[in-house]
Image 1 (cartoon, rainbow, N blue to C red):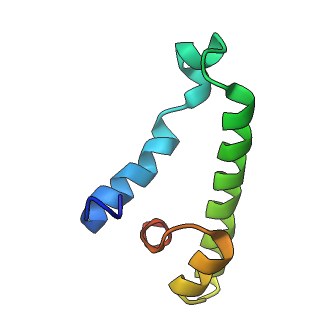
Image 2: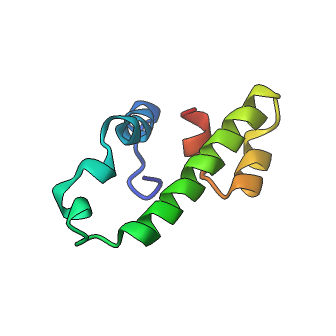
Length: 80
């Protein structure tokens, strides 16, 4: 997303896709053609990082600090 220089609305919309599309319901995922176990771990870590970032943001911490701690991009944090 950063390389494409997307505007803030596009970044926010892309962040919302994960709430709409559920990978577990995808036919390839269910048939095991996608490495579900690895994907599930990565997805869990990403979701946990988003939750932590949201809490830190609510506490008023700097976006750059949150990005450093969670390893999320500044754009992802701003979209929360």
